[in-house]
Image 1 (cartoon, rainbow, N blue to C red):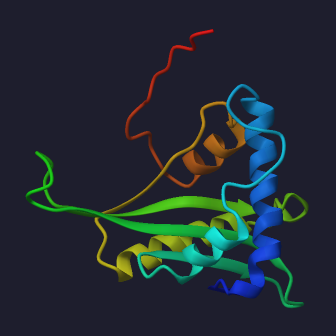
Image 2 (cartoon, rainbow, N blue to C red):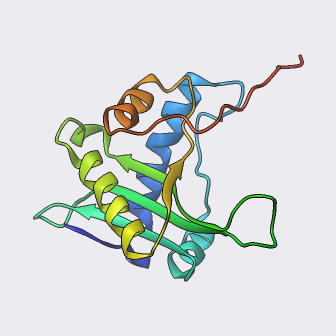
Length: 157
């Protein structure tokens, strides 16, 4: 079952966020720390309570949270830029517990995000994925996602 996250879910969300960090750290130790989270508990509580953001969890029949989905609606209005007005659902985070992978839970979360975006009147769904995260790249490409643009870097040491 996919449901909105609650404040009581924060400890489990933090565990999943740490799993994401480990994957990123292994791919890019020059950018990502080996431990930590992108949110403090207080910040995560604020995200859960933010009307402009939605956090969903995938919960199994025993009540165990096996994944999460952080969503944010971004809008470009007529006056904001040379771009046409567009409403985008941005997947800020999609995670399936490392022990629950291979059960198509990520697909379920992704398709839930697509349905949510349609319900909210969005034009598209976007996300960021690190090029060094080959598994995530394959996963999103298999779901039909295509690169939108590439951000390049030169590391100055």
